[in-house]
Length: 283
Image (cartoon, rainbow, N blue to C red; front, side, top):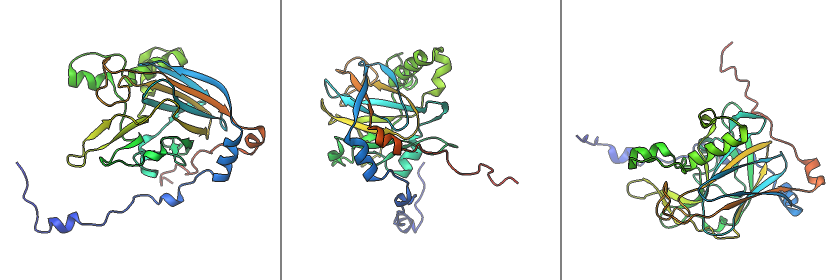
């Protein structure tokens, strides 16, 4: 049963849209520092993420990491934690509010409350050129969650164990030496790396389309704090057709851990915990 629009319905719908947060005041790493940081990067380790699986990696504060397409068009699901306190982790919702539905060079990944601080800064993105397409789609979204076996069970009635949620859970179970049931609550909403997504213009439903990523493309980050990461190579491949099954061609992803010059590291300062006093008005 539908409701009758009020007489001033059109007037209400024409209210001015206001950006919620003053993005100009969001703290950013100085462009000059990032330029100096990138000038003498050395790859110190490479982690291979197999197709339809996940791998973990660690990045000391001041160092960085790249997620690299190496064999074919492939998207990845990224989780990040404070390596010294796993209760502090990537907060996709706050990142979305402070930047946009999709992130690129200069944007930062933020941690959950009460830490609420930058944990990684995007320093380079070879897909920055993509921008927004005619469908409203963009690359590297913080609006989707991650494909998971529970939703797949609801929609398709079968168990599938290589959804990104399960991949990340297995990888963290190995990393921490704990049962899957104990580490699963650590898995959180992701940065969908290389994934091209948006909301349909008519029904505003979440959509995916074939990623523009090609071998050689990468997205690069500086670690604003000590990081533990986990990356899943999504079973959806380039997410141009299906996911949560073994039908789509999938490819590995590489994670390159990079180190800047000693001079830049000496200048680097890790991001402090949020300065709010956490009294919440209680005397």
